[in-house]
Image (tube, rainbow, N blue to C red; front, side, top):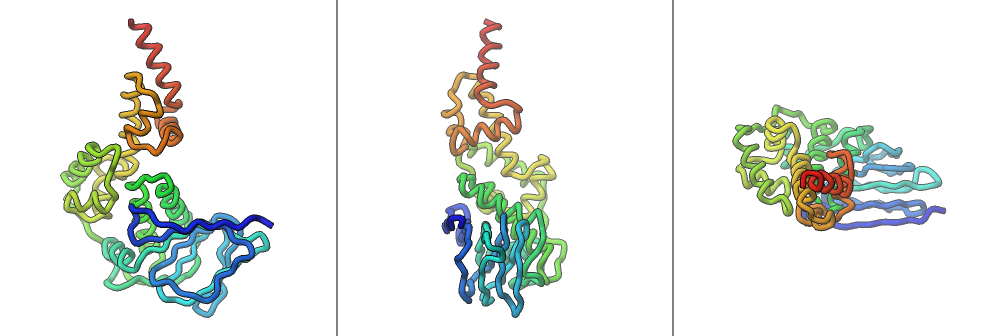
Length: 278
């Protein structure tokens, strides 16, 4: 019998949102409700739960969507249980996102309690991963995108065009702020407020201007700055902290993905070039 684990927590970058990552086998949830929404991405096994008079089955790769104050249960759908990552956003957060993507006023409802949506599942997992790595801009962005996808694709509400902003100047101001706070960036909501925009319109404007969303641009800029520091002889562990990565392992992962080699190899190559010149 696999060991059951559960980690229930909050992160300062995601105020009002609870997070749960768990693997359950024998555990079952009795009838209960939540005062906010539930987005649960099942990563292995199968979860089953009673909801709105039906037995819902959530296989790996699917997302369960539960509305506020709806009675439901939860238990394993197969003998080996299930693993999942869950977001519990508040009603106000979902309503705010719904407004930005053009939904009619009011708290959104979901026609289907279980959806097969690879992007939504990935965004829930990315929110968890970024929060665990203390990447506040990425965590708040992935959360917002997850809620946006849930509302746009799966809400029973009618949608309009959503809000827009005067893009280029807003995106430029956001980029300058991120550059000035490379090691301690704001959340997406703080960034939007600083440039007098709303989060979703800012995301669209930034991507249109620079080809990347703010959190991805920030990672790229951190790696570029790391290249300069490594070339000047700064040790990789110090570089990681200076540019805002949690530790050297996270620097290495992003550095290799963008540059193609680990920071140590890059530093050695730069040193060899400099010694040849000298």
